[in-house]
Image 1: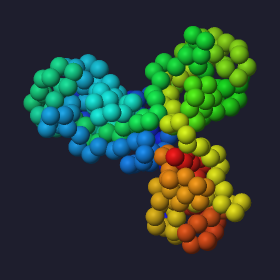
Image 2: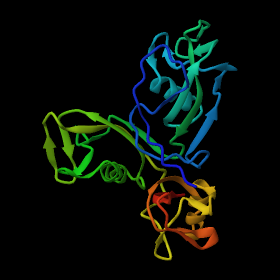
Image 3: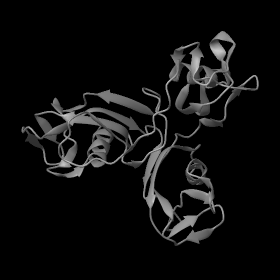
Length: 269
């Protein structure tokens, strides 16, 4: 009945690939609500009628920079995920040149995010890189990213990426991590102002199943329904994972099987 949440950690080496590749540039941890208020998925993206090359410049600034550029041209803060595969001709947008060789690769999909929000590159607090943990060895990733966004006036973080770096500021403790194991955020995309993020959302005290009906109307419809029950227009983003029991709200039934999945967070707009 249910499929697991896709978490992408992709490192892709140019230029050749035998199949479509999925990218999220570094460590990107987020479920994506396709077509939600703050994000949009572009299938077979085009610039001036041409397929978009996976490199912004000839043989340079590939994948994330090229996907980000496409999204910014369309009014978004940047790209969350993308897929590419061999194709030609493609437009190398940064150079306004065409790649028409067998080794050319272009995007098949790009999911853009951040309309109404903001993407922070190399986020800083008091001039220091932000550690991926809010406290020393605790409250890592989502809590730390949320804290950064709230400090900047946003409801919370939609997506983030992090990598090894030092020194970093462990913001909740106001201490500095300056060891080989330190990791800090390279990007944080903050959610638009005026929404609300629900952690471990519940209906009638039960975890909310990722499907509104039994095996049907999954993810976006179920998240939208939860938000509407709470007075919001719909869901921008959500995350889910295996859990049991969960409430299949549309049918008022409980799923208590190993394959059940429920929302861990829902951001309503």
